[in-house]
Length: 311
Image (cartoon, rainbow, N blue to C red; front, top):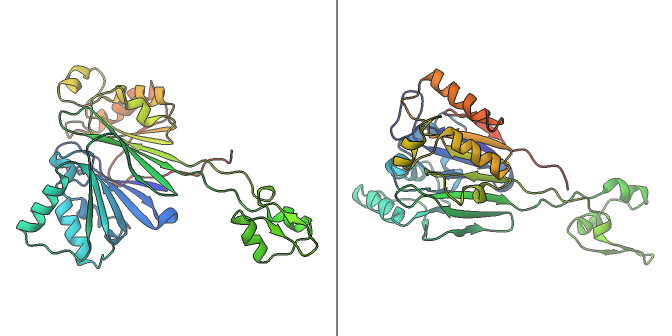
């Protein structure tokens, strides 16, 4: 599991930062990639990475401001031109379906794959299968804006091969049966209980990605105990009034959320073009006063989210 930042800017593209898009790379887990937001130029950013558009399985949109959605029509078209034929799901606020369909209709674009739309009207689970659950919480940005919490299911324990070998149980199909949770009856009448030959489970990982927002009462709930929390940092220390007026957050407020939610790592994004290099360094240093494990990200930064220790 990896996060790769395709765009880390706020509002408009800058020379060093494109507008928002984040890839959650689940290649080992499900041979797929999930995008969170798709600002203008996202497909151009992808050309500088190893990401293949046909691997993009889901696109989660936080809100419908242009710097978060204007890249959708181009990316969807390119995915079709490049041989993508697997279905794609777009999840986001009401209106995202109309936006995409209008753009495709006006440009007479015909895709080689179906798009499924799931428009969010309230907080709750927006996707779930046996491996992952994704929750959405409504934020405070003047228009409907959501944050997403991705929870990985606990990973099963490993088969205790050494224990089986010590008990002179030779490798064979029964190893697979035990690993799959089935008890095994040996020819001599001995019953091998699967639970006694499977190691401890490994807790699943949690990633929280916020859309644009003021600080809200759901912020800590959304990020609680996350391995990684991605949060906007449109404004800096001492600019809390401006942040509130423009429905955004400061670096210090994001750090307070991370601290209160007991997350492991805070990644700050949505950086305004008005910040110069020295300003960005200060954004990070100031936030670290509250939450030491903070990083202001830049375009193409990649972060591996390691497996947790077994419980």
